[in-house]
Image (cartoon, rainbow, N blue to C red; front, side):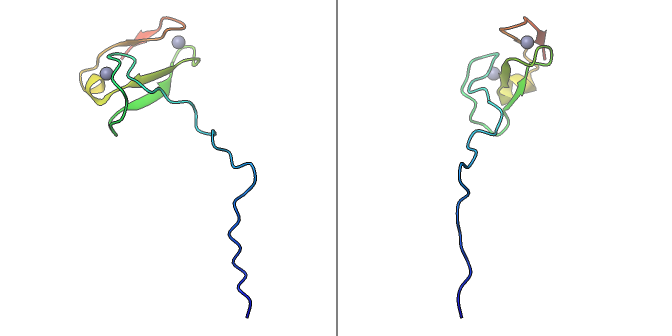
Length: 73
Ligand SMILES: [Zn+2]
Ligand SMILES: [Zn+2]
C-alpha cells in the first residue's frame, strides 16, 4: 500500500500578506512586544500605521499621525 501523503509547500508562499505593523508605540515609543499592544492604520489617511502599547491604551494617551496630523485616542 502506498502512502499518498505528500506534504509539499506551495510555491511562492506569501510571507508578507500581513499588513505592515508598527514596531513601536506611536505615543511613547516603546517596542510593541506585549499582547496588549495594537497596531492599526491611521483612521483619517490610512497611510501610516499607528502603534499603541498596552499602557498607552489603558491611559488613553493620544497619538498623532505623522502624515496627516490626525490626533486621537
Ligand atoms: Zn505607549
Ligand atoms: Zn494619518
